[in-house]
Image (cartoon, rainbow, N blue to C red):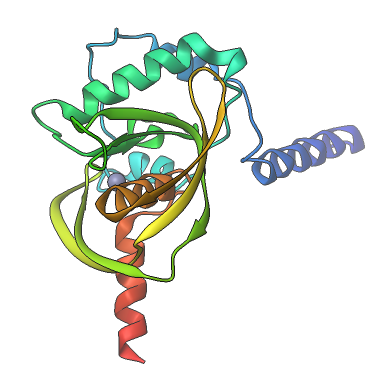
Length: 209
Ligand SMILES: [Zn+2]
């Protein structure tokens, strides 16, 4: 290999590292992501990625990027509607879903609001938990990406202070409590490649000491 070839490989490596470091800064939807989202309409479910498939598992463990709402309104609207359809279809019947679970590494989640009248299913963009209560709660959790099991966790916060963007591009702050706070914690974990079984493992190893 000549000097130039070596330099080129080095440059590619450096820029690859740079991309990984800034995984939380906002990027546009890639052609592949757009194709997947526009492959159906609002009433079409998307395939749910599962932890027991090696390729799916790698994506589920990858952190998601922030989204610029103003620049991506049309695709975000369709993604949110398709995620809602996927979450409530007859196979899944979930109470929350995160974009990585349908193969899109973007910071978008759907949560059913058990703390609101008529239990609406709502989309949240770039959600961040800025504060956790010291008080914990104990609940059974399951995950659409981890078929065939449910487990009880005791390490989830009872209340959280949440910041997010809505589809109008407005930045909001909200306090959420009780079971709905668990759904937010579970779904936002997905955006960092974290699954509820990781918390379970941590609780079990803590209880051994
Ligand atoms: Zn999940």
